[in-house]
Amino acid sequence: SSLSSFAEPVIFPMSLNNPLSALTVSDDDFACGHTKGDILILNDVFTLITNYNEEKKKTPAKQQLEDSNDTVSTPSSSLIPHPAKAVLTRKLHWHAHPVTTLSFLGLSDGSMLYSGGDESVLVSWQLSRGTYRPSDVLPRLSKGGIVHITCANDDGFGGGSSSSSEDGNGILVFCEDNTMQLFESHNRSLLWRMQGLPSDETYVQRTPPLVLAESKIISDPHDNSSSLSSSNKKHLVLCGMTGSPGYIHWYDPQEERVSGVLEVAPYNRVSRTEHSDLPMPSPALVQSAFSDNGQHLVTIDASPTENSHVGKKTVLQNGETVGVTHTVRFWSWNVTES
Image 1 (cartoon, rainbow, N blue to C red):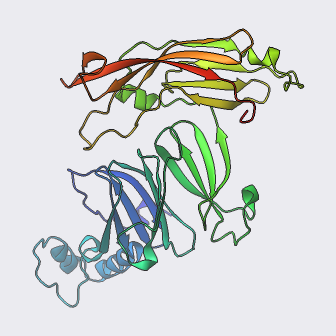
Image 2 (cartoon, rainbow, N blue to C red; image 1 turned 90 degrees about the vertical axis):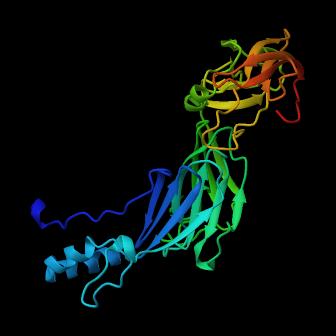
């Protein structure tokens, strides 16, 4: 069909002070995530637009007059108000930072909504209950914010309980630290997890470390001495990766996957109280050294603290003063956990 057969677009104005940051659609409903952390549900959007366009074809002149009327006066009974005026909305708020992803999952009528953001928390909303509070929160999914949430519709996928493909049986979550996780939809239990090489460049650009990190790749000395390494597998140890500050990673070149992660310098990735606040700088792995047999490891990390009287006093770009502490940590190989 030609372009002239399409109806004119229907515009729903959004606040400039709270821009749109995420959007998802389920049949007739919209869910809009915003930078201030709130979620706006718009019900029966397509139905309203369809009825509006049909009425506009019948009485175009009168309908245009109704659209231009921004007052709160009652419209003529023969006219349908603009969908932006007639739509039923509902506001939800849990996130303290921008909502980065939304997805209607579970039942085919879109009664379940899932949201994620910088907090790395999977938030569940059971919309059919009519409540303004989340039905469930699953915290600390990864070492970075949630980028995308979608539904896994394959029956029995990942070892979960089978269900109809229409309803889906899993929640697939991808995070900034390059992890992908599949959760059971009915109880949010973890079915499987894939870890790629973390590369949260976006976060590091917002919060560059105050101390230059040591970057190096070495062959794991533990592979040569461990009696458990019957397969003669060799692992690479990656220290001071730019996109993953404060971490050491063990990488298996044969399997092409991350086989282990050590968080040397724990830190709060969501340290802001307001969206406009500058996050705390990320930590830095300054030095690391293994013993000859790989059984022991010594690390030195530099971590910022809001207490400027602790450690070295440092002034940030926004003029705030923080302290930077250097910590020496001693690690031993745990055979049971490995």
